[in-house]
Length: 445
Ligand SMILES: NC(=O)c1ccc[n+]([C@@H]2O[C@H](COP(=O)([O-])OP(=O)(O)OC[C@H]3O[C@@H](n4cnc5c(N)ncnc54)[C@H](OP(=O)(O)O)[C@@H]3O)[C@@H](O)[C@H]2O)c1
Image (cartoon, rainbow, N blue to C red; front, side, top):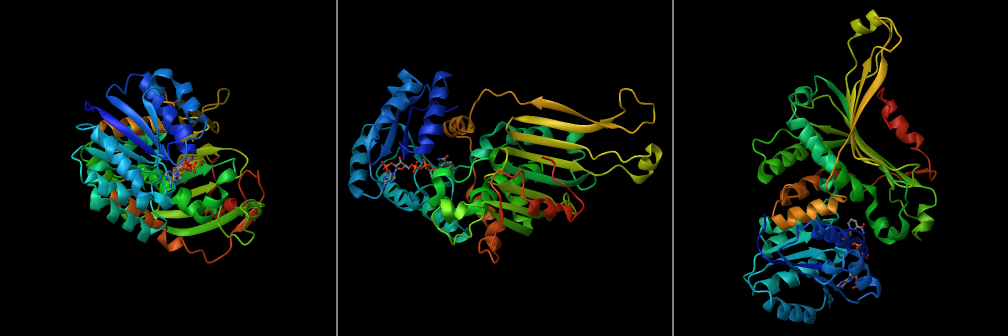
Protein backbone atom coordinates (compact mmCIF):
# COMPACT_ATOMS: atom_id res chain seq x y z
CA UNK A 1 0.00 0.00 0.00
CA UNK A 2 1.35 3.41 -0.97
CA UNK A 3 1.61 5.52 2.17
CA UNK A 4 3.48 8.33 0.45
CA UNK A 5 1.75 11.64 -0.18
CA UNK A 6 1.36 12.01 -3.91
CA UNK A 7 0.12 14.41 -6.58
CA UNK A 8 -1.34 13.35 -9.89
CA UNK A 9 -0.79 15.37 -13.08
CA UNK A 10 -3.18 14.58 -15.89
CA UNK A 11 -1.87 15.94 -19.20
CA UNK A 12 -4.98 16.36 -21.34
CA UNK A 13 -7.07 16.58 -18.19
CA UNK A 14 -9.99 18.25 -19.98
CA UNK A 15 -10.25 15.64 -22.75
CA UNK A 16 -12.76 12.88 -23.36
CA UNK A 17 -10.89 10.13 -21.51
CA UNK A 18 -10.26 12.34 -18.48
CA UNK A 19 -13.87 13.46 -18.31
CA UNK A 20 -15.54 10.11 -18.96
CA UNK A 21 -13.17 7.72 -17.20
CA UNK A 22 -10.29 9.18 -15.20
CA UNK A 23 -12.03 11.80 -13.04
CA UNK A 24 -15.13 9.66 -12.34
CA UNK A 25 -12.88 6.71 -11.38
CA UNK A 26 -10.75 8.92 -9.14
CA UNK A 27 -13.85 10.38 -7.48
CA UNK A 28 -15.15 6.88 -6.73
CA UNK A 29 -11.79 5.79 -5.30
CA UNK A 30 -11.82 8.95 -3.18
CA UNK A 31 -15.31 8.17 -1.88
CA UNK A 32 -14.24 4.64 -0.97
CA UNK A 33 -11.32 6.05 1.05
CA UNK A 34 -8.52 4.85 -1.24
CA UNK A 35 -7.01 8.26 -1.87
CA UNK A 36 -6.03 9.19 1.69
CA UNK A 37 -2.51 10.19 0.61
CA UNK A 38 -3.62 12.30 -2.37
CA UNK A 39 -2.43 15.90 -2.17
CA UNK A 40 -3.78 17.30 -5.47
CA UNK A 41 -4.90 16.31 -8.95
CA UNK A 42 -3.64 18.80 -11.52
CA UNK A 43 -5.49 18.90 -14.80
CA UNK A 44 -3.21 20.22 -17.54
CA UNK A 45 -4.42 21.45 -20.93
CA UNK A 46 -4.16 24.54 -23.11
CA UNK A 47 -7.59 25.86 -22.32
CA UNK A 48 -9.90 25.36 -19.43
CA UNK A 49 -13.15 24.25 -21.00
CA UNK A 50 -16.05 25.92 -19.18
CA UNK A 51 -17.56 22.70 -18.03
CA UNK A 52 -14.38 21.22 -16.54
CA UNK A 53 -14.88 22.52 -12.97
CA UNK A 54 -18.56 21.65 -13.04
CA UNK A 55 -17.83 18.10 -14.25
CA UNK A 56 -15.23 17.47 -11.57
CA UNK A 57 -17.09 19.11 -8.67
CA UNK A 58 -20.34 17.41 -9.55
CA UNK A 59 -18.65 14.05 -9.09
CA UNK A 60 -17.83 14.81 -5.46
CA UNK A 61 -17.55 18.24 -3.88
CA UNK A 62 -14.70 17.35 -1.52
CA UNK A 63 -12.79 15.54 -4.22
CA UNK A 64 -13.38 18.56 -6.48
CA UNK A 65 -11.54 20.74 -3.96
CA UNK A 66 -8.41 18.65 -4.54
CA UNK A 67 -8.51 19.25 -8.31
CA UNK A 68 -6.80 22.23 -9.92
CA UNK A 69 -6.65 23.32 -13.53
CA UNK A 70 -3.19 24.35 -14.83
CA UNK A 71 -2.93 26.04 -18.25
CA UNK A 72 -0.29 24.04 -20.10
CA UNK A 73 0.98 23.39 -23.61
CA UNK A 74 3.05 20.22 -23.75
CA UNK A 75 4.99 21.55 -26.74
CA UNK A 76 5.88 24.88 -25.13
CA UNK A 77 9.07 25.04 -23.00
CA UNK A 78 7.58 27.95 -20.98
CA UNK A 79 4.91 25.62 -19.63
CA UNK A 80 7.60 23.40 -18.11
CA UNK A 81 9.23 26.39 -16.42
CA UNK A 82 5.88 27.06 -14.72
CA UNK A 83 5.52 23.37 -13.89
CA UNK A 84 8.97 23.47 -12.29
CA UNK A 85 7.78 26.25 -9.96
CA UNK A 86 4.85 24.10 -8.93
CA UNK A 87 7.10 21.07 -8.32
CA UNK A 88 9.18 23.19 -5.90
CA UNK A 89 6.13 23.19 -3.63
CA UNK A 90 5.78 19.41 -3.75
CA UNK A 91 9.15 18.36 -2.29
CA UNK A 92 9.21 14.77 -1.02
CA UNK A 93 5.92 13.85 -2.64
CA UNK A 94 5.51 11.12 -5.21
CA UNK A 95 4.66 12.63 -8.59
CA UNK A 96 2.45 10.70 -10.99
CA UNK A 97 2.22 11.96 -14.59
CA UNK A 98 -0.62 10.59 -16.69
CA UNK A 99 -0.35 11.21 -20.46
CA UNK A 100 -3.99 11.42 -21.54
CA UNK A 101 -3.11 13.36 -24.69
CA UNK A 102 -2.90 12.53 -28.36
CA UNK A 103 -0.22 9.87 -29.03
CA UNK A 104 1.37 12.37 -31.45
CA UNK A 105 2.27 14.47 -28.41
CA UNK A 106 3.79 11.66 -26.31
CA UNK A 107 7.38 12.16 -27.50
CA UNK A 108 7.55 15.92 -26.91
CA UNK A 109 5.95 15.57 -23.52
CA UNK A 110 8.22 12.72 -22.36
CA UNK A 111 11.32 14.59 -23.51
CA UNK A 112 10.38 17.93 -21.94
CA UNK A 113 9.08 16.39 -18.75
CA UNK A 114 12.04 14.02 -18.46
CA UNK A 115 14.49 16.93 -18.72
CA UNK A 116 12.60 18.92 -16.11
CA UNK A 117 12.49 16.01 -13.68
CA UNK A 118 16.29 15.69 -13.72
CA UNK A 119 16.24 18.67 -11.36
CA UNK A 120 14.09 16.87 -8.81
CA UNK A 121 14.56 13.86 -6.59
CA UNK A 122 10.88 13.10 -6.01
CA UNK A 123 9.81 9.51 -6.61
CA UNK A 124 7.89 9.52 -9.90
CA UNK A 125 5.72 7.43 -12.17
CA UNK A 126 4.65 8.04 -15.76
CA UNK A 127 1.52 6.56 -17.31
CA UNK A 128 1.27 6.24 -21.08
CA UNK A 129 -2.12 5.69 -22.70
CA UNK A 130 -2.65 3.57 -25.77
CA UNK A 131 -1.75 3.53 -28.60
CA UNK A 132 1.86 2.96 -27.59
CA UNK A 133 3.48 3.45 -31.00
CA UNK A 134 2.01 2.81 -34.44
CA UNK A 135 4.25 -0.13 -35.36
CA UNK A 136 7.18 -2.05 -33.93
CA UNK A 137 9.74 0.59 -34.86
CA UNK A 138 7.87 3.56 -33.35
CA UNK A 139 7.10 1.55 -30.18
CA UNK A 140 10.81 0.74 -29.81
CA UNK A 141 11.62 4.43 -30.31
CA UNK A 142 9.09 5.44 -27.66
CA UNK A 143 10.50 2.85 -25.25
CA UNK A 144 14.05 4.13 -25.88
CA UNK A 145 12.93 7.67 -25.20
CA UNK A 146 11.21 6.67 -21.97
CA UNK A 147 14.30 4.79 -20.80
CA UNK A 148 16.38 7.95 -21.21
CA UNK A 149 14.46 9.56 -18.38
CA UNK A 150 12.61 6.80 -16.48
CA UNK A 151 13.27 3.26 -15.35
CA UNK A 152 10.86 0.43 -16.17
CA UNK A 153 9.54 0.37 -12.58
CA UNK A 154 8.37 3.97 -13.10
CA UNK A 155 6.62 3.34 -16.43
CA UNK A 156 2.96 2.28 -16.60
CA UNK A 157 1.71 1.43 -20.12
CA UNK A 158 -2.06 1.16 -20.12
CA UNK A 159 -4.34 -1.39 -21.70
CA UNK A 160 -7.62 -0.80 -19.91
CA UNK A 161 -8.88 -4.31 -20.78
CA UNK A 162 -6.45 -5.60 -18.17
CA UNK A 163 -8.41 -3.74 -15.51
CA UNK A 164 -11.55 -5.69 -16.32
CA UNK A 165 -12.71 -8.25 -13.76
CA UNK A 166 -13.37 -10.91 -16.34
CA UNK A 167 -9.84 -10.78 -17.74
CA UNK A 168 -8.41 -11.16 -14.24
CA UNK A 169 -10.86 -13.97 -13.57
CA UNK A 170 -9.46 -16.00 -16.48
CA UNK A 171 -6.22 -16.01 -14.56
CA UNK A 172 -7.94 -16.85 -11.32
CA UNK A 173 -10.13 -19.60 -12.75
CA UNK A 174 -7.21 -21.25 -14.47
CA UNK A 175 -4.61 -21.11 -11.75
CA UNK A 176 -6.65 -21.62 -8.61
CA UNK A 177 -8.74 -24.57 -9.85
CA UNK A 178 -7.03 -27.79 -10.72
CA UNK A 179 -10.18 -29.07 -12.46
CA UNK A 180 -9.79 -26.37 -15.09
CA UNK A 181 -6.03 -26.12 -15.35
CA UNK A 182 -5.84 -29.89 -15.84
CA UNK A 183 -7.83 -29.72 -19.07
CA UNK A 184 -6.44 -26.40 -20.33
CA UNK A 185 -4.43 -27.80 -23.20
CA UNK A 186 -4.38 -29.41 -26.65
CA UNK A 187 -5.62 -32.75 -25.25
CA UNK A 188 -9.04 -31.34 -24.37
CA UNK A 189 -9.44 -27.99 -26.12
CA UNK A 190 -10.47 -27.87 -29.77
CA UNK A 191 -10.09 -24.13 -30.31
CA UNK A 192 -10.53 -20.73 -28.64
CA UNK A 193 -12.64 -17.79 -29.85
CA UNK A 194 -11.86 -14.23 -28.78
CA UNK A 195 -14.50 -11.75 -29.85
CA UNK A 196 -15.03 -8.00 -29.33
CA UNK A 197 -17.98 -6.65 -31.31
CA UNK A 198 -19.16 -3.07 -31.03
CA UNK A 199 -22.44 -1.45 -31.95
CA UNK A 200 -20.91 1.98 -32.40
CA UNK A 201 -19.03 3.10 -35.49
CA UNK A 202 -16.11 5.50 -35.32
CA UNK A 203 -18.35 8.34 -34.08
CA UNK A 204 -16.32 11.52 -33.56
CA UNK A 205 -12.97 9.70 -33.66
CA UNK A 206 -12.90 9.28 -37.46
CA UNK A 207 -9.76 11.26 -38.18
CA UNK A 208 -7.74 9.39 -35.55
CA UNK A 209 -9.29 5.98 -36.31
CA UNK A 210 -8.63 6.20 -40.02
CA UNK A 211 -4.87 6.24 -39.33
CA UNK A 212 -5.15 3.30 -36.98
CA UNK A 213 -7.85 0.77 -37.94
CA UNK A 214 -8.89 -2.36 -36.08
CA UNK A 215 -5.47 -4.04 -36.25
CA UNK A 216 -3.80 -1.28 -34.27
CA UNK A 217 -6.83 -0.20 -32.23
CA UNK A 218 -7.97 -3.66 -31.05
CA UNK A 219 -5.87 -6.60 -32.25
CA UNK A 220 -2.41 -5.36 -31.24
CA UNK A 221 -3.51 -4.64 -27.68
CA UNK A 222 -6.86 -5.79 -26.24
CA UNK A 223 -7.33 -8.95 -28.32
CA UNK A 224 -3.77 -10.21 -27.92
CA UNK A 225 -3.85 -9.38 -24.21
CA UNK A 226 -6.94 -11.56 -23.82
CA UNK A 227 -5.14 -14.28 -25.75
CA UNK A 228 -2.06 -14.08 -23.55
CA UNK A 229 -4.13 -14.42 -20.35
CA UNK A 230 -5.90 -17.45 -21.85
CA UNK A 231 -2.76 -19.11 -23.18
CA UNK A 232 0.03 -18.25 -20.70
CA UNK A 233 1.74 -20.83 -18.52
CA UNK A 234 1.22 -20.60 -14.74
CA UNK A 235 3.76 -18.16 -13.31
CA UNK A 236 6.12 -19.66 -10.71
CA UNK A 237 5.17 -16.84 -8.33
CA UNK A 238 2.22 -14.47 -8.21
CA UNK A 239 4.41 -11.44 -8.69
CA UNK A 240 4.30 -8.81 -11.40
CA UNK A 241 7.64 -9.91 -12.84
CA UNK A 242 6.70 -13.58 -13.10
CA UNK A 243 3.22 -12.86 -14.53
CA UNK A 244 4.58 -10.51 -17.16
CA UNK A 245 7.43 -12.92 -18.02
CA UNK A 246 4.89 -15.63 -18.84
CA UNK A 247 2.79 -13.29 -20.98
CA UNK A 248 5.86 -12.24 -22.96
CA UNK A 249 6.82 -15.91 -23.50
CA UNK A 250 3.40 -16.66 -24.99
CA UNK A 251 3.44 -13.58 -27.22
CA UNK A 252 6.89 -14.45 -28.56
CA UNK A 253 5.44 -17.76 -29.77
CA UNK A 254 2.25 -16.28 -31.20
CA UNK A 255 1.75 -15.82 -34.91
CA UNK A 256 -1.11 -14.80 -37.16
CA UNK A 257 -1.76 -17.37 -39.86
CA UNK A 258 -4.67 -15.69 -41.70
CA UNK A 259 -6.25 -12.28 -41.43
CA UNK A 260 -9.41 -10.99 -43.08
CA UNK A 261 -10.28 -7.28 -43.10
CA UNK A 262 -13.65 -5.58 -43.54
CA UNK A 263 -15.00 -2.03 -43.58
CA UNK A 264 -18.58 -0.98 -42.88
CA UNK A 265 -20.51 0.70 -45.67
CA UNK A 266 -20.49 4.46 -45.31
CA UNK A 267 -17.29 4.51 -43.24
CA UNK A 268 -15.10 6.17 -45.88
CA UNK A 269 -17.65 8.97 -46.33
CA UNK A 270 -18.04 9.35 -42.59
CA UNK A 271 -14.31 9.91 -42.09
CA UNK A 272 -14.13 12.19 -45.13
CA UNK A 273 -11.67 10.03 -47.11
CA UNK A 274 -13.46 8.23 -49.92
CA UNK A 275 -10.32 6.23 -50.79
CA UNK A 276 -9.88 4.92 -47.25
CA UNK A 277 -9.01 1.22 -46.98
CA UNK A 278 -8.78 1.23 -43.19
CA UNK A 279 -10.38 -1.85 -41.64
CA UNK A 280 -13.21 -1.49 -39.12
CA UNK A 281 -13.57 -5.26 -38.81
CA UNK A 282 -11.21 -8.21 -38.77
CA UNK A 283 -11.01 -11.94 -38.25
CA UNK A 284 -7.70 -13.61 -37.53
CA UNK A 285 -6.56 -17.18 -37.12
CA UNK A 286 -3.77 -17.14 -34.59
CA UNK A 287 -1.48 -19.93 -33.40
CA UNK A 288 0.55 -20.25 -30.24
CA UNK A 289 3.48 -22.45 -31.17
CA UNK A 290 4.27 -24.27 -27.98
CA UNK A 291 3.77 -27.64 -26.29
CA UNK A 292 0.44 -26.76 -24.62
CA UNK A 293 -1.30 -25.36 -27.70
CA UNK A 294 -0.05 -27.46 -30.59
CA UNK A 295 -2.95 -27.96 -33.01
CA UNK A 296 -5.30 -25.50 -31.25
CA UNK A 297 -6.25 -22.41 -33.30
CA UNK A 298 -7.27 -19.15 -31.64
CA UNK A 299 -9.88 -17.32 -33.72
CA UNK A 300 -10.14 -13.58 -33.17
CA UNK A 301 -12.97 -11.38 -34.40
CA UNK A 302 -13.47 -7.68 -33.73
CA UNK A 303 -15.41 -4.96 -35.47
CA UNK A 304 -17.51 -1.82 -35.35
CA UNK A 305 -21.05 -0.88 -36.39
CA UNK A 306 -22.45 -4.36 -35.73
CA UNK A 307 -25.83 -5.38 -34.35
CA UNK A 308 -24.84 -5.83 -30.69
CA UNK A 309 -22.00 -5.21 -28.31
CA UNK A 310 -20.33 -8.43 -27.24
CA UNK A 311 -16.91 -9.04 -25.74
CA UNK A 312 -16.04 -12.59 -24.78
CA UNK A 313 -13.57 -15.41 -24.86
CA UNK A 314 -14.97 -18.88 -25.51
CA UNK A 315 -12.90 -21.97 -24.94
CA UNK A 316 -14.42 -24.77 -27.00
CA UNK A 317 -13.59 -28.31 -25.94
CA UNK A 318 -13.21 -31.33 -28.20
CA UNK A 319 -16.10 -33.49 -29.28
CA UNK A 320 -16.87 -36.59 -27.25
CA UNK A 321 -15.37 -39.72 -28.79
CA UNK A 322 -17.13 -41.41 -31.64
CA UNK A 323 -17.96 -44.56 -29.64
CA UNK A 324 -20.07 -42.49 -27.24
CA UNK A 325 -21.94 -40.93 -30.13
CA UNK A 326 -22.92 -44.40 -31.34
CA UNK A 327 -24.05 -45.41 -27.87
CA UNK A 328 -26.37 -42.43 -27.59
CA UNK A 329 -27.40 -42.33 -31.21
CA UNK A 330 -26.74 -38.61 -31.35
CA UNK A 331 -23.87 -36.17 -31.31
CA UNK A 332 -23.55 -34.28 -28.01
CA UNK A 333 -22.47 -30.66 -28.43
CA UNK A 334 -19.01 -29.56 -27.45
CA UNK A 335 -18.45 -28.25 -23.91
CA UNK A 336 -17.61 -24.59 -23.63
CA UNK A 337 -16.31 -22.17 -21.03
CA UNK A 338 -16.99 -18.59 -21.87
CA UNK A 339 -15.71 -15.47 -20.16
CA UNK A 340 -17.89 -12.51 -21.02
CA UNK A 341 -16.84 -8.91 -20.44
CA UNK A 342 -19.73 -7.19 -22.18
CA UNK A 343 -22.65 -6.76 -22.05
CA UNK A 344 -22.18 -8.50 -18.66
CA UNK A 345 -19.19 -9.66 -16.64
CA UNK A 346 -19.86 -13.35 -16.32
CA UNK A 347 -18.58 -16.86 -16.66
CA UNK A 348 -20.70 -19.48 -18.45
CA UNK A 349 -19.93 -23.18 -18.49
CA UNK A 350 -21.93 -25.13 -21.04
CA UNK A 351 -22.30 -28.86 -20.77
CA UNK A 352 -24.79 -31.59 -21.64
CA UNK A 353 -27.13 -33.49 -19.33
CA UNK A 354 -29.89 -36.05 -19.62
CA UNK A 355 -33.15 -34.25 -20.49
CA UNK A 356 -35.54 -33.98 -17.52
CA UNK A 357 -38.20 -36.17 -19.14
CA UNK A 358 -35.96 -38.48 -21.11
CA UNK A 359 -34.95 -42.07 -20.56
CA UNK A 360 -31.57 -43.14 -19.24
CA UNK A 361 -29.87 -43.25 -22.64
CA UNK A 362 -31.65 -40.22 -24.20
CA UNK A 363 -29.75 -37.69 -26.20
CA UNK A 364 -28.51 -35.02 -23.81
CA UNK A 365 -29.61 -31.38 -23.79
CA UNK A 366 -27.39 -28.35 -23.53
CA UNK A 367 -27.29 -26.91 -20.01
CA UNK A 368 -25.28 -24.01 -18.74
CA UNK A 369 -24.17 -22.56 -15.47
CA UNK A 370 -23.68 -18.82 -15.20
CA UNK A 371 -21.71 -16.94 -12.62
CA UNK A 372 -21.79 -13.14 -12.54
CA UNK A 373 -18.52 -11.66 -11.36
CA UNK A 374 -19.26 -9.36 -8.43
CA UNK A 375 -16.96 -6.35 -8.26
CA UNK A 376 -16.11 -3.55 -5.90
CA UNK A 377 -15.14 -1.46 -8.90
CA UNK A 378 -17.47 -0.11 -11.57
CA UNK A 379 -14.82 0.74 -14.08
CA UNK A 380 -11.56 -0.86 -15.29
CA UNK A 381 -9.80 2.49 -14.80
CA UNK A 382 -10.60 2.38 -11.06
CA UNK A 383 -8.65 -0.87 -10.74
CA UNK A 384 -5.76 0.44 -12.83
CA UNK A 385 -5.56 3.80 -11.03
CA UNK A 386 -5.52 2.06 -7.67
CA UNK A 387 -2.76 -0.33 -8.81
CA UNK A 388 -0.84 2.63 -10.18
CA UNK A 389 -1.06 4.47 -6.87
CA UNK A 390 -0.07 1.32 -4.98
CA UNK A 391 2.80 0.61 -7.40
CA UNK A 392 1.56 -2.78 -8.63
CA UNK A 393 2.54 -3.17 -12.29
CA UNK A 394 1.02 -6.64 -12.91
CA UNK A 395 -1.83 -5.23 -15.01
CA UNK A 396 0.33 -2.82 -16.99
CA UNK A 397 2.32 -3.68 -20.10
CA UNK A 398 6.08 -4.03 -19.79
CA UNK A 399 8.46 -2.59 -22.41
CA UNK A 400 9.44 -5.97 -23.89
CA UNK A 401 5.78 -7.03 -23.86
CA UNK A 402 4.61 -4.04 -25.92
CA UNK A 403 7.30 -4.84 -28.49
CA UNK A 404 6.28 -8.53 -28.54
CA UNK A 405 2.68 -7.43 -29.19
CA UNK A 406 3.76 -5.28 -32.13
CA UNK A 407 5.90 -8.11 -33.52
CA UNK A 408 2.81 -10.31 -33.81
CA UNK A 409 0.85 -7.80 -35.94
CA UNK A 410 3.77 -6.17 -37.78
CA UNK A 411 3.58 -8.43 -40.91
CA UNK A 412 -0.09 -7.42 -41.34
CA UNK A 413 0.20 -3.64 -40.98
CA UNK A 414 0.62 -3.07 -44.72
CA UNK A 415 -2.54 -4.49 -46.22
CA UNK A 416 -2.25 -5.95 -49.67
CA UNK A 417 -5.96 -6.21 -50.43
CA UNK A 418 -8.84 -3.81 -49.93
CA UNK A 419 -11.21 -4.72 -47.11
CA UNK A 420 -14.59 -6.25 -48.01
CA UNK A 421 -17.63 -4.08 -47.31
CA UNK A 422 -20.33 -5.05 -44.82
CA UNK A 423 -23.64 -3.46 -43.90
CA UNK A 424 -23.97 -1.43 -40.72
CA UNK A 425 -25.96 -3.25 -38.04
CA UNK A 426 -25.34 -6.77 -39.37
CA UNK A 427 -24.82 -9.43 -36.65
CA UNK A 428 -21.49 -10.41 -38.19
CA UNK A 429 -20.52 -10.26 -41.86
CA UNK A 430 -21.00 -13.44 -43.95
CA UNK A 431 -17.24 -13.43 -44.67
CA UNK A 432 -16.58 -13.87 -40.95
CA UNK A 433 -18.89 -16.89 -40.77
CA UNK A 434 -17.11 -18.45 -43.71
CA UNK A 435 -13.74 -17.68 -42.16
CA UNK A 436 -14.12 -20.48 -39.62
CA UNK A 437 -16.79 -22.55 -41.39
CA UNK A 438 -14.04 -23.48 -43.82
CA UNK A 439 -12.45 -25.36 -40.91
CA UNK A 440 -15.71 -27.01 -39.80
CA UNK A 441 -16.31 -24.58 -36.94
CA UNK A 442 -18.83 -21.87 -36.06
CA UNK A 443 -18.77 -18.77 -33.89
CA UNK A 444 -20.54 -18.98 -30.52
CA UNK A 445 -22.12 -15.54 -30.17
N1 LIG B 1 -11.34 8.68 -25.16
C1 LIG B 1 -11.23 7.38 -24.93
O1 LIG B 1 -12.22 6.67 -24.64
C2 LIG B 1 -9.89 6.72 -24.97
C3 LIG B 1 -9.82 5.33 -24.81
C4 LIG B 1 -8.57 4.70 -24.80
C5 LIG B 1 -7.43 5.46 -24.96
N2 LIG B 1 -7.52 6.80 -25.14
C6 LIG B 1 -6.27 7.56 -25.29
O2 LIG B 1 -6.24 8.60 -24.32
C7 LIG B 1 -5.59 9.75 -24.84
C8 LIG B 1 -6.53 10.96 -24.75
O3 LIG B 1 -7.67 10.73 -25.55
P1 LIG B 1 -8.97 11.66 -25.50
O4 LIG B 1 -10.03 10.90 -26.24
O5 LIG B 1 -9.24 12.10 -24.11
O6 LIG B 1 -8.50 12.90 -26.39
P2 LIG B 1 -9.22 14.35 -26.49
O7 LIG B 1 -10.63 14.29 -26.07
O8 LIG B 1 -8.88 14.86 -27.84
O9 LIG B 1 -8.44 15.22 -25.39
C9 LIG B 1 -7.12 15.64 -25.57
C10 LIG B 1 -6.68 16.46 -24.39
O10 LIG B 1 -5.34 16.91 -24.65
C11 LIG B 1 -5.30 18.35 -24.51
N3 LIG B 1 -4.27 18.86 -25.42
C12 LIG B 1 -4.27 18.88 -26.77
N4 LIG B 1 -3.14 19.45 -27.23
C13 LIG B 1 -2.43 19.82 -26.13
C14 LIG B 1 -1.20 20.48 -25.93
N5 LIG B 1 -0.43 20.86 -26.97
N6 LIG B 1 -0.79 20.69 -24.67
C15 LIG B 1 -1.52 20.30 -23.61
N7 LIG B 1 -2.70 19.68 -23.72
C16 LIG B 1 -3.15 19.44 -24.98
C17 LIG B 1 -6.71 18.80 -24.85
O11 LIG B 1 -7.02 20.07 -24.31
P3 LIG B 1 -6.65 21.46 -25.10
O12 LIG B 1 -7.02 21.25 -26.53
O13 LIG B 1 -7.44 22.52 -24.41
O14 LIG B 1 -5.17 21.65 -24.91
C18 LIG B 1 -7.51 17.72 -24.14
O15 LIG B 1 -7.57 17.97 -22.76
C19 LIG B 1 -5.17 9.38 -26.27
O16 LIG B 1 -3.87 8.86 -26.24
C20 LIG B 1 -6.15 8.27 -26.64
O17 LIG B 1 -5.63 7.41 -27.63
C21 LIG B 1 -8.72 7.45 -25.15
